[in-house]
Image (cartoon, rainbow over all chains, first blue to last red; front, side, top):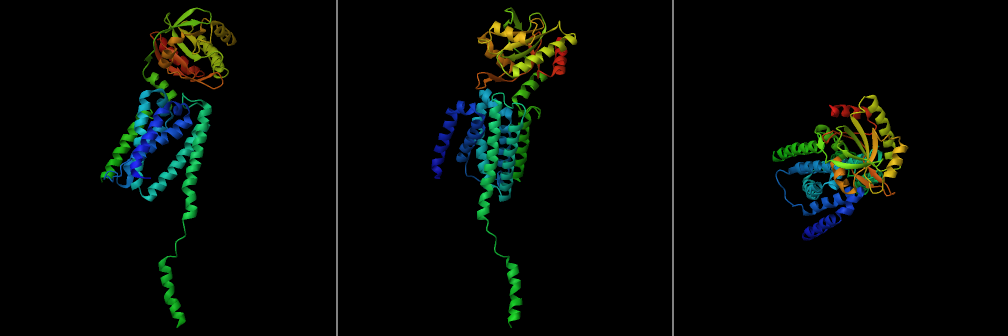
Length: 196
Length: 200
């Protein structure tokens, strides 16, 4: 995608999240699994392409993003975003920032770190799925127990989807490497010896 | 070096944020947060008037200087309020047994006052053996309801079947109008202990 289109796209997404806030907040599945990722995407689209010294290796920005995500995974924060205007404001400001930090960190992260984070994301979604489908009590005062179960299944599908999206390409792309060079080299003298 | 320093700073700040956001790891939900908040520091609630199941008037905080044990219900509730009603009956017995009957009053307050008329409250009270002396069913005026619910931290949402889903609990209100404790309706020991503390 052309880079100069990004701010416009981010503005459109942000505006639709703002205008549709009432409707999106009314349903926890839309709130947590649609609105929050969309706001994060705004941040990704707007993230500057700089390589700061403090962000080297991606550790600091990724850690900051993880703490932010942990905060918004608390049922109390989600409940608060529905109940208190100040928390709604905090959501609209902080979640795009989390998205931006995630993008900045991801670009500089080593492949191993990326793999680790992917595994973490799948297991976290799985944990949230278990929590919301098995909790005997309502975790949000603003949502019905049925909605909580639906959110749990949403997280389950997310976990399965992410796991498939990240593993299936490996089945097709990863070609076995050619034989190690050292072994083919050691074969040659023997072969030349027998031929003489 | 800079990256390491920044990471350590982020961990410290992030840890602090999560610590704050969960009251030191104790409250992950809004419900446990409101219970913890009043337990740490009793919070004032605006006084309001009520009409009881016998048509008499009452107030919270109690004008006679009693500690009020308040729960919020609606009389047509098919599930939770019925079991909460049974819990309130048992709580009344516990209060009598603890010798607190003359210093404590039990109140089931309707958050659907337009629908819950005196007759409906009376029939709910009869179903659960509310004696209208120690324990009564009452409704506020509809216009003060939002303030009451916000003071007590009660959220009632339509359940798509014509009723409501709401957080159910017993709220201990002292005679000077402070919300001092919130407990599950079946946590009799906790409620009695809080009531004892409040009558002192």
